[in-house]
Structures are given as C-alpha cells and as structure tokens.
Image (cartoon, rainbow, N blue to C red; front, side, top):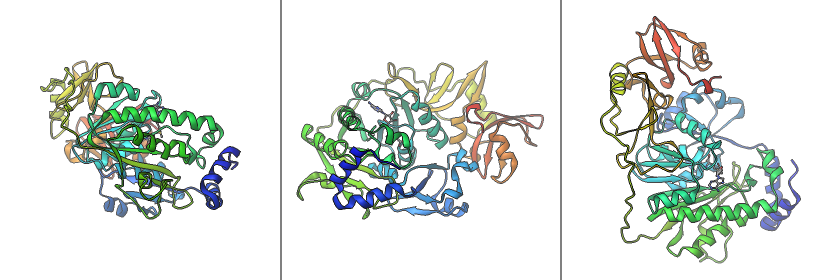
Length: 450
Ligand code: SAM
C-alpha cells in the first residue's frame, strides 16, 4: 500500500522514531470485530452458542475479535441483529460516552450506525436516542441497521447540526460527535480514503468539525457529556478541536471516563494540560484501526428549562386495526402513545419533541402500516419482538435450508394455523410471514433478500 507523501511526512513529524512501527502496522492485516447485541442475548450465552474463535476486546465487554474465515457477516444470525460488525477501536466511543438507561442521548453523525446501535444497547433501550445523519443516502443504512438491531427508543433524523440545535437547545444528557474526518484510520481497509486524502481535506474537515461541535455544545444540557471522536490521526482534527472547545466554552472540561493501558494520552503540553485526558488508540499499539477520543463535561448550571415544544399529533387510543392485529397475533398491545406519519403507525415518547420542519426518517418505534382497514406489521416490529410475545412462530435453525430460503424470499410449508407468524432462527426473529392453508407467504423485505 502506498501512502501519500505529505501524510508520511506529517506522521513522521508526529510520531518520531515510532513512525516505523506505525507504518508497519498499516501494511499488516487488520483485526476484525463484532459486538454482541445485549438487547437480544447475553454475552456469555452468545459465546457458548457460536463455534467461532472469539477473543474479548478489552475496552468493550460486548466486543470480540473474530477470525476472517468464520465469516459472521454471512451467517444467518447476522440478519437477526444479534451482533454488529465493527472496527474494535470504534467500540471505545460508546463505552466512553456510557449512556444510562433513561437518558436523552444524541448521536449527531450517526450513519451507518456503529455507535448508535451500541448506545441503544448500553441504554437498554430506555430513554431517548436521537440518531442523526445529514447525508440522505447514508441515513437509509442507519435506519436499516437500527431496525435490525431491534431498537425501540430511537428517533432518526436527517438534519444539519445547526438546525437541530435551533430546535432542541440544551436538551441532551449525552452527545456523541463521531465526526466526518480525513479518514486516516481507514487507509488500511479503504483505498478510496487514501486516494482522497490531502492537506486541504484535513483543513476542511477541521473547520466542519468545529461547526458540528458548536452545535453539539448548544444542545448539551448542564452537567451533560460530550464525546468527540474521529478515526483520523491529524492533531488539527483531534487535540486542536478539543483545545478550541475549551478556549471558546469556559463551562466545558475534559474528563477521563474510560482508559485502557494500550491507549495513549492525546498530544499535550505539561502535566496540567487537560489534553492529557484525551485518548489516542494507535494501530501499532493495539489491534484496531485507530481512533481519537475525548469526553468533555459541561458544568452544572441553574436548572435551565429543558422543556421544548411537544409534537401535537401524538395520540393515546390505539387504531382499531392495530388493536385487532395485536389481539390476533401478539400477546400484548404496544401501549403507545402513537403517532401517524401518512399511513404508518409509530409508538413514540410520551413527551415527543416537536418534529415538524425537521427531516424525520423515524419518529419512534415503527409498528406497521394501516392499509385498507388492515394492519400490516413492520419489519422493525418483528426484529424487536421476543418469540414469547407472539402467538404464532415458525421456528427454524441456522443449519437448515428453510432459513436461507426465507431470506431469499421463498414461501415455506408449515403446519401453523392461518394468520401472521414470526419467523425465527434459533429463537431470534428474522421477519414476518403470513400463513394461509399451510403455506407461509414471505414478508421479508424485498430490499433485504439475498
Ligand atoms: N458514527 C458512525 C458509525 O459509527 O457508524 C460513523 C460516522 S462517520 C465517521 C461521519 C458521518 O458524518 C458520516 O455519515 C457523514 O455523512 C456525516 N457528516 C458529513 N458532513 C457532516 C456535517 N457537516 N454535519 C454532520 N454530519 C456530517
């Protein structure tokens, strides 16, 4: 792999004699990681149930290194959202943010969803996670990944950070800015990142990052945590931006919430320099692509009014179509409150913020669609249910051809009575089917079939 000359010169200046091992690491095979979905399975249970060679990732209790030949991305379980494939060093970000169940959390640059799925799991699906992605193509992958993950506590938006800041004000307990960056930590896996890199890109990214951080600061409630991260190595995009935050917002301080012996402190001056509390994950010092991380806390202030305007369309009485679907198919009724977007029904927060005027991709947990007096359950509903919550389940196991046939969109033979049935593999939902006369019609989304 040929590295850009200017990048080599920069890194030599930054790392001195350590540059040789850094350059060597960039030429080596990368380490692969998967993170277990603790909303769906316990970590130990997962380890016992798969035959893959897994090695724990020290800074993430639900993260494991895996061997490429085990190919978890091709396994049927991947379609159930039981795990997410993610660079091991990227798993440090949500761990550092440490969101608590019940908190209001914002992932400001969220696609394709590595940090957002992790945040939702750490929150145990309780509280509110706003996952925002400005790019309208990338937001689709975000929605798909969060749907597969089975998160119910998420609003997905596609807005500019400044627009969100105008709407929300200081609303969030915890904000993650996993910023767009010059992507130097992607060089090993992405030729495009290497080809696009230049000094101008580093400068442009550093300027954009400051704009995003300004908006994040405005949305952080007193006492709240802001985690800033990039997958790049330049000081301009990392320590310099943290220094910029400290210089511009006197109520912010850098805090050290998570450390690991294989991490290095960020580049800093003397022992009083707060930048010593930032973290560098280097690909030559640990198994991972590399990351920069900083956690900042906003000072407690007078209890500011965190109240914001609420969405007026929220209603409490379930639609009759949902009620009869739940009575025929589920063992409970999603309790609401609800919101309709066109014919689509969502379960939303009691105090759902006003969403009008924002580009909202999902205002909450997508339950399904009202169509000609019937309720058509959504894929998101299937992937967030447990089999015991459903009256009819078609149970398959990963090793049998029917599981692959279902993912390919085929009908399946079944002895189940007529009606909607949840198709599960090894006890994890894959999607819906509708049984009629011993045939299960396939409702796995067409765009996901393989
Ligand atoms: N957090 C994501 C994950 O873990 O899967 C990765 C985020 S990626 C490093 C940065 C994201 O920021 C990209 O999806 C990109 O589209 C988005 N982005 C680009 N320009 C932006 C801007 N001006 N404001 C906010 N987000 C931006």
